[in-house]
Length: 262
Length: 267
Image 1: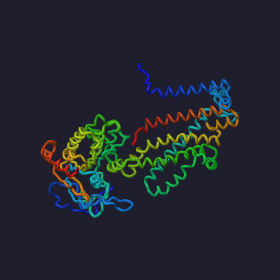
Image 2: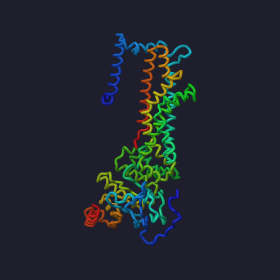
Image 3: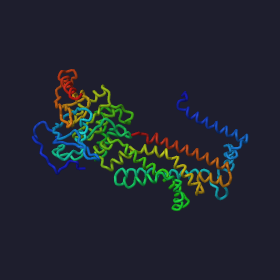
Image 4: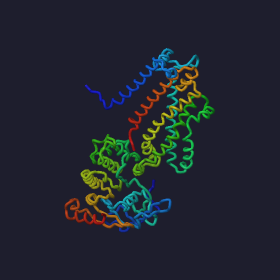
């Protein structure tokens, strides 16, 4: 019989227990009708509300099922992040290829990078309208500049020996970028993508709160408009848990697929 | 990529007479370009002939210019045009796939297995993939890495890493192998194994090798010829033929005498 590996299980067990403890305290507070639970109803209340409504959020024609809301948000975040990841790699490598391009683009990058993605929302709505385009664009803007700057830093970190070795073995300039520089920088840029996922996640929720009719952010806004605190709490829980799950998936990819360190 | 300048033909003096040479330094001067103009390296108007089909080792203190010299031989540093490195009767103007370099570290790509790293040497050559697979397994066997073929560099010891790097360099059948302190990070017993291996591979393939090191024992036992570089501007303070069998015996009087002579110059 295999005994449980406590060294590995401990963080999970302790983490889960503590999480449950907080929920339990919250429930107790709810049953004793402490004041804060009128704005923050405990899980038993908001979860039962959602189950009773058959996992459909909202009223009448605006109602959408929960899985649609989750899929909509995930789709936007992944589309935006994937586009930003690819675009950042391409921009970074183009900049790395030519000093002239570096001089042209890098001031622009550093001016645009500090602008919060939320600030782009008004412009994006004008250009794309209130639809997926806006949400994807906001996520893209939230990650692209940081990733590009990160890509440049990663390219500078590629050991000189790699470049010499590949040139020695007959790789052309392009072959060197594809077969050596790209694999050398991928894990580092991906780690950066993971750390910036939170920013992208927040950006899409704000975009959904401001304009979209669907998605997890829209649930919060609907709750606000209907004075439905259960709905708000439920939306917040789903946002938190989904974000946590996506981070675990990204961590898994980073550890299992892009595992090497240069 | 035509890296040999064909506009400047140059006839080697005494061509045809033995021993054949692989490199000739002809008034070689290297300066480092900086923003405030060129900074001279210790290498000023150097002259030297390096024989083909042998191992030449270059010893010297840190900063004496030995690594710069090796990089210039590889074509990675462009010397002043008052002279240069003559390779195959022409002044070198850049790297060529015929001359392969091995470094102290970072030789291997961490995302490829031992096999993948070795195969990388053939990736940019037009050869039958079946021939390539045979070549890879043969070369891995010759450096004793058949069992480690599927392992990744981070799973290897320092010696295995360097053996992989040597295998990848030799699979391309280069004319010249340049080694920049390749065994410095290894412990003494592993180092001696590598010395034997590199000598065997040299005898087997006939590749010309130039190795830079700061280890006197390594220079004498591995090299067929030992050069000591020193001074500023630099010159070859010692130039000894070490092909005699006694030079492989670390307790022979010839060996000890040379070691003493070299150490008195270096330290």
